[in-house]
Length: 128
Image (tube, rainbow, N blue to C red; front, side, top):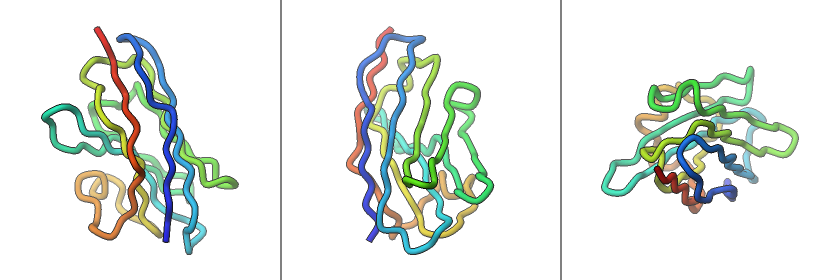
């Protein structure tokens, strides 16, 4: 059973930066897919960035491309999301997610599977 523990949320003013971390454990395979999703107030869940450990390969939603950077430290199975130039619309609960093995990152961000794994969420608040 994969377990995910997130950290790093907080409050920041527009234009500021935050870095989220997600430590994963329990993978059965050496190469896996991980990503970040978010849900803002009265908004649907949105996939923002994903990474496949072999390569690694990355994919970003248009809303964060150029501002957010996803990375993975394979030795510790720790995924990061560096968020720069934050905007009020980035406010929400950010969730770390994982799928064992490979996924087509663009499609996985749009529709993760029901048996994927999720963290508990961490709040990001950006004030104007």
